[in-house]
Image 1 (cartoon, one colour):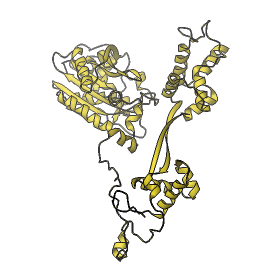
Image 2 (cartoon, rainbow, N blue to C red; image 1 turned 30 degrees about the vertical axis):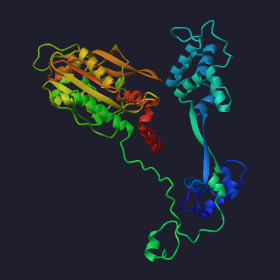
Image 3 (cartoon, rainbow, N blue to C red; image 1 turned 45 degrees about the vertical axis):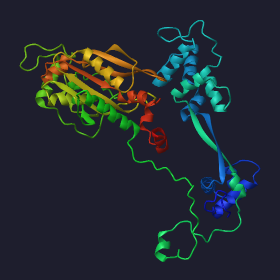
Image 4 (spheres, rainbow, N blue to C red; image 1 turned 90 degrees about the vertical axis):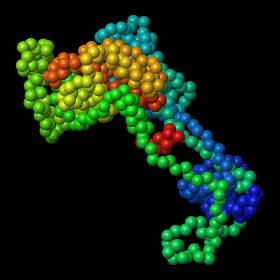
Length: 498
């Protein structure tokens, strides 16, 4: 123990701290935590704790270096063994072997076709075939060379090709921190003689009850030591952003509504004039529930919905609204329970319960679809459903709502194009540019068809939309992967919030 040069209280050391500081003094230069632990034959966790305490007492200095390493993902290692999809497709086409379903998975097929087209191997049109002037097949594709270079930890690596492989989930960047410790000037001067085992560092409840602390010296309190920064409770960044977006819509005069996550096919699809044999209602998109019984829809409304599906006139009407879908409506399908695949079901329930205009409603809630996970898709996603209905409403009002929502969160660049949805006509899609992923479809919507509004007894135009709120949040929060919205790493969340 020695007096501090600035005249503050003397600094006391525990035996582990004294041993670590002595080791730092004996080292010829900065030393790693692993080297100190090996030299002292002490667990590295104990060494790290002593080093941090020495640092807080201004007796040790640390040099920290951050390194980024390129690594293969488990999927990338498996792909390296069997070959990239584009290589396997190239070999099949060169051998004249017909492409079957088992040769490539759907996501592999699209990636392989895109790479081979970009590299000049594929001729235009279908069936897929090699161009007559295609590069030699024996030459390694840049994607192959980059994947192998990452596996062998060799340089150089093409950053653009690496970025494409990263988006495909084959490679990733791992960040590591390396620390080197050395004694400070004060740490070199302080005396390491004596022992402090008879001094009390902290009072325990047992010591208080037994009064064993009486008459024993305490270690001095270092007022210069930094205290830990305590982060107060706060909402998740994505949840907080969703609340801000809700405030935008409420400020535009919309009321908020909710609906069940477990729906029946009637509310999820039938009411929205989606044909019962529509591909989107197959097992590939909608998640069906087993061993559950769905509640049948109201009989009067179900009869009216069946009429428009079959092209018949509504009860009490002389003419049919439209030709329908050319088949018989099956009421048994209507009661099948499903996980809600779109929040448009909330709009259907809202309009069925409140059929008098004007309508200004929105709902921000979760939906579920059978999706392959990637940077843009997730099996669980949040959608912002909304409707605006009254006399004089047109598709131009819908475009104005999209622009107002985008501008409210700082997005100025957006483009609109025509689209198709079974329950709206006309229909549009609004796209927003993501700095890394390009143009993302975020604002789909249109005007509800008469086949949707007629069974509900509504005779005013109704604009409807289902904003991809998760993708919009990616752009607003500066994220490159939709899965980052569900991040539960407290260190990353606190770092991003400060």
